[in-house]
Image (cartoon, rainbow, N blue to C red; front, top):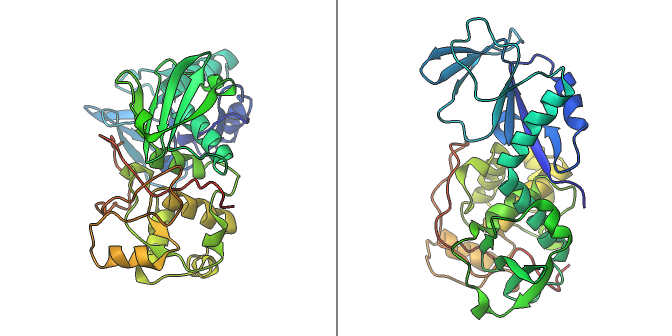
Length: 341
């Protein structure tokens, strides 16, 4: 499969094209692409412009006169960052990680550090790719991931995931998938835990494959609830779609017309909302949410990869905040559906 896609954001560079070209030479373990700051998995910052203004706060002016400077709280940064050298002569701080963009070895070294820090998200993207590829064939409520006879992962298709901390992305080329009954849903306390909704949400915005079930392009789409994923994953494009659907059910074509989204934007964003249990094509399930029902009802999809609905979640703010942790098991409606194409 293609290497998982990771997004790099740039701060302080008027034209980061040279840096973007450097990213394109890197495709062995991770395929790096330029992206908006809010979506970035990591940041490169122009060191010659960055200055400490007070404890932990660094000001990075833009090379574009019309754009305002960015103030970054180093204590609150929730993703890998590195500053280019040379640093500002009055920087007043020493970054933990720097690199020389004119030196290939320096660039490779900083990307190695980033990729190690982002190992778990990378593994989850590889897992999501496999789930998406197998979504029409999975029949069991629990899948065990076996590597050379050893259990290295458990995917409970009602929403929980546990992965061995020793996994590396390339392991997925050799992992065997074994269907198990619901009684085999125990996850080792040593495993790294996450949830299926968040894993598939991240993947849906990075793949070129259309993961939105066909029926979502053929009939009315109904709003159910706010997405059950960490707040920092929700973007304006998702909020726009939810705002439209909270007003009234709409078809795929109507949503595209009312939002001005391209086919790819609409399909990817709706797929994310689908995996997070926010939308349905079943008016009965939308009606239960609008009436304030807290009952668990059958999903709008066949029970397979994800099981039951959850009660309504709290509102998600428009701007992404700090990385949220998902504590405890989480379930969402069946987003991966055998037999339905």
